[in-house]
Amino acid sequence: MIPIAKPLISDEEKRAVVEVLDSGMIASGSVVREFEKEFAAYIGTDACVTTTSGTTALEVGLRALGIGPGDKVLTTPFSFIASTNAIIYTGAEPVFGDVGRRTFNLTADSIERALKEDPSIRTVLIVHLFGQPCNMDKIMPVVEKYDLTLVEDCAQAHGAQWNGKMIGTFGKTGCFSFYPTKNMTTGEGGAIVTSDPDVAKNCSLLINHGMEVRYHHDRIGYNYRMTNLAAAIGRCQLKKLDEFNRIRIETAELYNREITNPLVEVPHVLPGAKHVFHQYTVKVSGGRREDFIEHLTENGVGHGIFYPLTIPEQKCYEGRNFASGSGVADILKNQVVSIPVHPSLSEADKETVVRVINDYK
Ligand SMILES: Cc1ncc(COP(=O)(O)O)c(C=O)c1O
Image: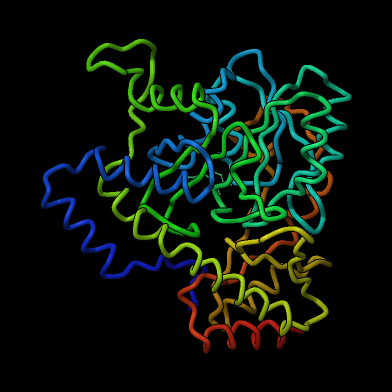
């Protein structure tokens, strides 16, 4: 089976981890500080604070802005659940907009609609899903018009850009995940990027038990610290990220050209977007998605359904009665299928993927 994801780890990462092990300094230390400097420089922000996961990065990225009980945060109904759980962890209330049919991303129109209905919403958490940036030409004017605080979930969009500007630099905070299936990995891990020094300081305190001076805890925080082991992997991966993304994009372009089956709608890339194809997600409509998946399985092509349910309808939120504007997301959840696009694919793998999809009747 051609897997849907496969991290690319080479001898360089192995050597870097062994070096950290040999140093005896395996928890958070100088390797983490170096990785943070390099990641901030790559994204183009003044600061980066690493964490244990994308989920904790999102929680801290919100908390560091003072978001908590009594606040409402508008977000997308179509994402991994961590995007919404992070809001809930802070004590704030999530409110859901809707996504575009072709972009899968939260639309500016749905943000504005929600704000007109409920002007007490002051924060928007956007998710650049599958590696495609949200349409920032449309979203930023709404953010400015209503003087909103913008937070970006960039867990699937390392190196993505909108009109040449790096994703993660539009919001007050940008939050990344380094889970093994992502465009780059640290094993588990996450990062918050920001150019606001106060926010950066809040993040640093929150991830380390509110401690600036050893054993003096000025506020209640967490242990969300990244280890030197993870950062050592991250430093190697960051150097390769642009090349990983180049291969993903090249593969996606090949698929877009060569998948010609009229039953399968290939992804749409917005003009102005550098889509880094964390996932290559096609749509199969007419109630044929399950049949299509069976065909992929029978022919050895791995796949994923991201996501089979919208966030507001997840069982864990039963009884919360979330206000939901998820009309489009409700349709997409029954159509989406992601197919392998990761940089470990061989030319033969890609040919197989195209052939199997074009053979589907
Ligand atoms: C959009 C999105 N947000 C947040 C996360 C959470 O990241 P992590 O799994 O590193 O906690 C993920 C990870 O899958 C994600 O895809």
